[in-house]
Length: 238
Image 1 (cartoon, one colour):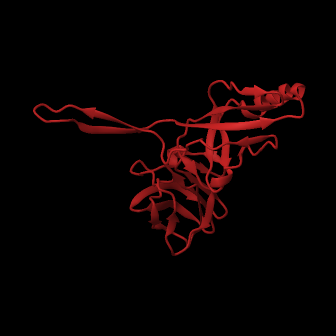
Image 2 (cartoon, one colour):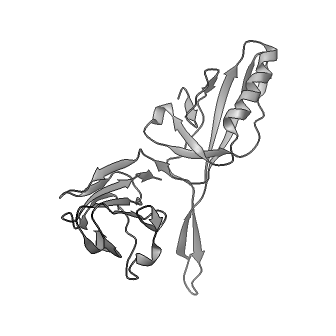
Image 3 (cartoon, one colour):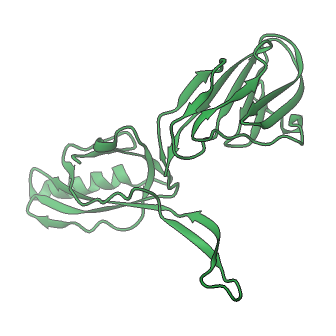
């Protein structure tokens, strides 16, 4: 691994060192329940914890004095109030979302320094690029190892008194007198219904179940004679 970008930025004076030891999955923690007269315990609940991503780095400057400016620049680059995208050169098709959590105490020799950046990912999963597909007569494929939360953008080409989207037999139904050119957004990640850019949660039929895209092929059923449907999602990995 030569380097990485954080918040869309990389630094020419900094090089990532071997030894970051990125784990193949985020930390898993189970809750167990003891059962009388039975050995061991029953697994009850699985929890995926935050993912630590410490990165050993080497950095250099032009002089001893310039080294202090480099450290100031590091702080400005790395410290944020919310997670930012972190992408490694040797894993360029995966995106982590990280914050710095902890101190950075480098060993310094003249105009060089070496230390560990204590990145933490509150959202423990890795993400791919966003995919946006016009719904046709073919399944939508999710390449990630985890379920993905799709967003359906539905542009009406004819009038309709309701609209239903079914994904792998999970159905979400919106009741509204739709007109031509109306725009319906079904955002399963935020569990939000929007019509013409206004939130309309009361239009959601109470029998609806929020759909997800499973790993592999997903069969989506919707009426394409009254609307054009775009499916947008981001694949995720452990």
